[in-house]
Image 1 (cartoon, rainbow, N blue to C red):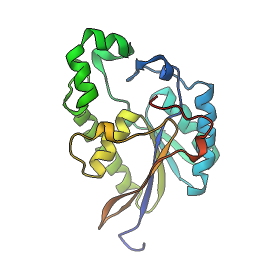
Image 2 (tube, rainbow, N blue to C red; image 1 turned 120 degrees about the horizontal axis):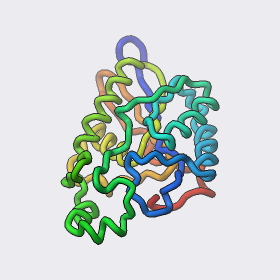
Image 3 (cartoon, one colour; image 1 turned 90 degrees about the vertical axis):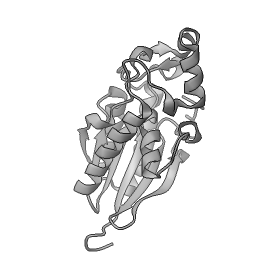
Image 4 (cartoon, rainbow, N blue to C red; image 1 turned 45 degrees about the vertical axis):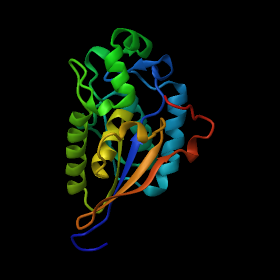
Length: 215
């Protein structure tokens, strides 16, 4: 594309596996680092997207995201910076709690989480609509300031799902209809006249020996 309708490419990335992924926890904004598997996943991911030549990597402030972003930045020669707008969903009273404990203590909210999480408002936390609005606002700002470039965003499943729902104009319920593995990537294209287009979703060809369902 030429002129004012340049094509912008956005690589949406879920961070690699971290401490807490396999412990059945609602991690939220609890700051877990990558584990060794997660670091290996991030290296494989960086290699897989290197041909896309991202010029910048924007990361959630949480360590599991910044570690993933740093590995990508080094491999791709891309500038890395942190964006608070891509921080994970704030989970309030569910933060860093075992899912089995939440199921026992808050059975009605738990059932809503499993059936229609878009309607859930956790005390002291965010709703998915809150996340959807802030994540898209940050994406749109970056697209406008990086028109015609390729850049990556490293964030979390509970940010990527509502962000994709907003980009694709999906109504509720959507959350459990989108699957995103750890260290997967998806690709968006944006043109001023046409808006956003999803090119690929949950790419995991680089992770065959790592994939674990639903973590």
